[in-house]
Length: 242
Image (cartoon, one colour):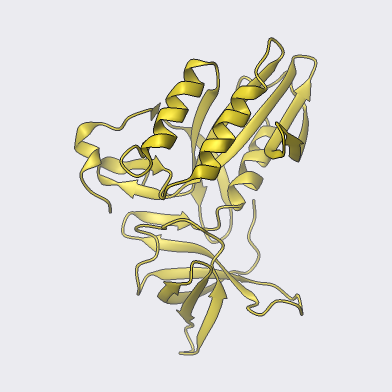
């Protein structure tokens, strides 16, 4: 996924969930859209270098969108919806092994009583429903955890995935790690124990989990490497957030 001419700035503050104030290199202060509803722990520190895209839409109150941030542990993409595009491109390119039998790919497909699958892969082998989650919460020991806030919606998605399982239908929870400081992933049971327990439950019933890292730069984001996933983090990694 390529970016086009991102503009750099310095984060002053994030507030009201969807807004942030940024200082441009010229000294001008602007308000930008923050496309992330999570806590953004470790990714919204005042003074951090950030990168912004700009929309030419005349209907937008704030034309700039916050895309990237340089954290103390490396570059991260805070625009969580970008994960869907990055993962789709990886499936199209055949980067993710084990899905060659599903060449047809659609996005935002309604299923399971009103839910929407981020991706639906189809082919002679059957179908695969894919729910993509962006991971940016980086803890000690390069551990990435999800979610970064209590997520009833995320728990609903887990049960929707389980509901489609049959002999010709797979369901995959895909953790797209958009933080360069993360090299393994776990559920954040301390933040949302109900999500952790639901994930354990649906995994036991056949929902698959994939975790992949990405190269994040102001020029592009590209899925690169499968990462280890464990339901619960190592004890040493549960004690701090960077």
